[in-house]
Image (cartoon, rainbow, N blue to C red; front, side):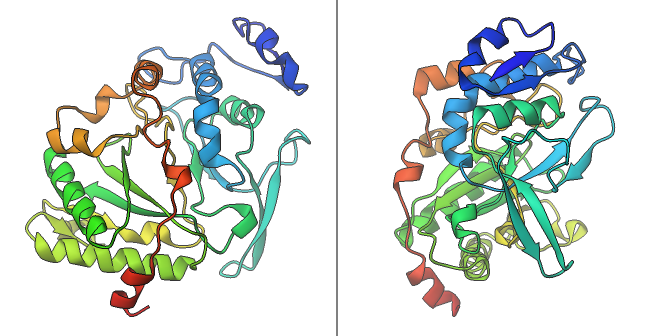
Length: 311
């Protein structure tokens, strides 16, 4: 990939071997109020591409663009724009609710990540299924979303209950910070079950955890009714929903990163989500490796959970 833009800091020479041409623009534009620029955004995704791409391969992406950085207006974009380079891979996906077919960009290579960053896409939001088995997700997710006033320790406590529940059903879950105030638990699956079935299974698990600790956990969708509890959002498993994937930057002050954790780290709780950001992500990866490295090699069986859920 040949990069041009005048302020690429040597990026052009680094990527010329990929044989793709991409002109970068406005590299000095400030994207975070701390002074981080679009160039910092692009360099982050180039550096992290080898560890990010295995999770994104063949997945439809939902774009949220911040052309003027996180303090400017942002907008969602699902359709691949007509001006996109012809080497951007796409997948046409039909949505019955809107009777529309949308051409989604697939997160298949480093050049695509760089092009997205140049479009002002700070976050990497992807489907839980791949285009090759679109209607059968290979990831289930439990999204732990704290209500206002809930501490991060409360989030970690609920995450440990989810972990215990998963172990009861012989399921492996992989925690990561959301990059904001919550936590995500990704559960690798065989791509056998429909989105509806996966949602039912995760709903059963969420109700189980909320029933054990109703004072701090809830499946209540109404925000005012959550009242100082952690919302177990299992509905993120629905078709067409997308999640921030491992190592995605987030559009928040400090440029936080959605960062994989160990369950031992969750248990000890000796960290803040703000500890994991654009400045520390590379060093953490060098020190600990990819903590999701076993994720792609595993696939859980949902049948025992589905039987209990009556799905």
